[in-house]
Image (cartoon, rainbow, N blue to C red; front, side, top):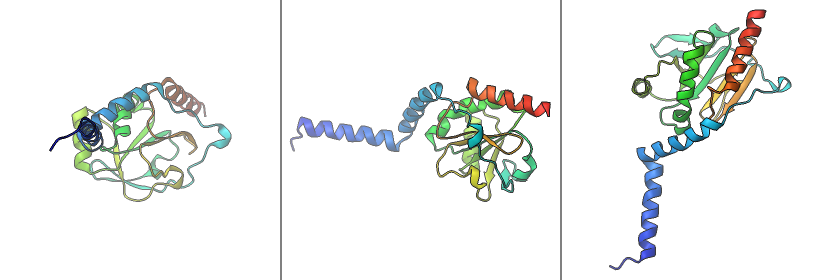
Length: 192
């Protein structure tokens, strides 16, 4: 059988696309490209008049040690919630910045990394990347103000339950904008 140059090039093209879409090589390439985007993107604060309030803090979670936790225990605190999974390239791309933010603010605000994945996969991912993050698993649907069909989805909530920042998709959560917003929330919270 005589393969034409055009057919050969088409085969090479489709094999390359398949490698990028359906193999770990593709995931690696997607993550690296998304990291470039993360470096230049930052979530913005929501205008005061457009901020939603989380009305119902009743939400059952399970922490990484298997302990049941209710989101109500965190009501009245500044909270950053990130919905993610180990198989999600945008989640993987933004996780180093979230990890840096957690290292600097983990003792000042509450962090919830709500995983959409198997515990074993999450533990392996965290260990491989040397992340020490507070991971939770949802045992029921999140409050409607925090619900998203897509991941990553990240929310910064003030101590009154207002959603101050919200981003569905990848972003740099370790940006100066985010840090300034958290510092402002902390200063306001201490002044009360």
